[in-house]
Amino acid sequence: MSSLRLALVTRRFWPLVGGAEMVMANLAEELTRQGHRVQIITAQWHPNWPKQISHRGIPVVRLPNPSLRGWGTVRYMMGLGRWLRAEQGELDAVYVSMLKHSAVVATSRLRNSKVPVILRAEGAGETGDCAFHETANFGHRIRRTCQSADGFVAPSQQIFDEMVSAGFHREKMTFIPNGVKVGPERTAEQRRDARAALAAANPILTLAESAPLVVFTGRLHPGKGLTRAVRAWPFVLQKFPNARLWIVGEGPQESELTAMIGAMGLQSRIILPGAFDTVEDVLAAADMFLLPSHHEGMSIALLEAMAAKLPCVVSDIPGNRILIHPDENGLTFPVDDHNQLASHLVRLMEDVQLSARLGEAARKRVIENFSLERSAFDHVTLFERLSETKRLTM
Image (cartoon, rainbow, N blue to C red; front, side, top):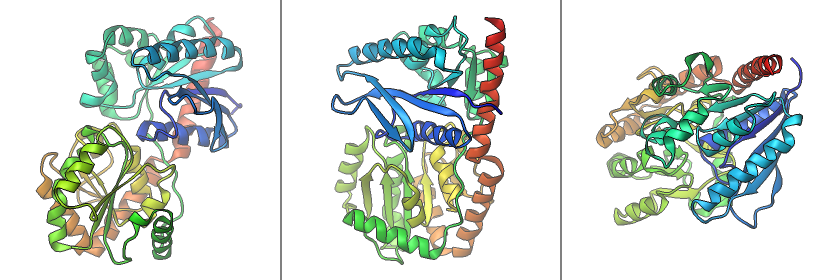
């Protein structure tokens, strides 16, 4: 396998942290480890952010993105177009996150070049990429431009099906599931050390070793169903008064969740500590993982929790069903049923053997089907094929 020169384009990136951003960061790191030359192209969301940084050893270029709504998007698109034109001779492929503005620029600017543009859809359902095309300004035009890209990656079957229904060419599409790092199995000592380290870094994360800890990691967005988790928590506390819920991440629903937690008197029981560069310590400190989303493609946060050997309680939606099989490697609950959500959490807190069995099965499923190494290899195979095809046809 030859070394490829790759640009990964994602308008949002560190320190803005969500599932799509983590996918690109993890993929860039693994592609680099496998010997490829990778750089990340993103937006400069704050004027005082440096225009170039290194993240996990990967060079990151930030393009102007003024805060003024509309104008910021235009400036970013202009900057991305100039960058691609200037650098196309040094690239073997461009990989773009989301079927939105970045995808429009990359597809348009490189259409007559030898550099293939591959677009990755990130979401499904009402908050997904295809739904964006139906509601956004110029959405149909964005979709038509995206459809002329050289290839597409769908990380879940639901996303794949939505794209086909929206008119994307099936023969250009590749199903590549998300992948995550799979580290050594967590020990009881690592759990204690992680809790101590987090408490030292932020006193609000202090909790007793015996306290059951449930965590959510991801973007704080209404589509994640987090208000349902807050409503369920008093029922959990009836059985386990020392249980804690950490809602880890940042996003537009943070103020609403904070107000709701305060109104219910749960300030010391449910913690919103913000976003973390990496959630390894959070998962190591936890006893179980919660994902109450309304919609998911294939959740990177859920995969990370499964790899960490955590029993997972998730909403019964198509994206989660791909990963979690009820009572086999996790538990599911109807989307709007916070009582069932609470019941599952209590059941896992009461039954240590069940928790351990589900966590072991979850980790095994990730190792066998969703490793980051395998995901990166599948991406490289696609990039090489499209790069060779485009060179021969230009």
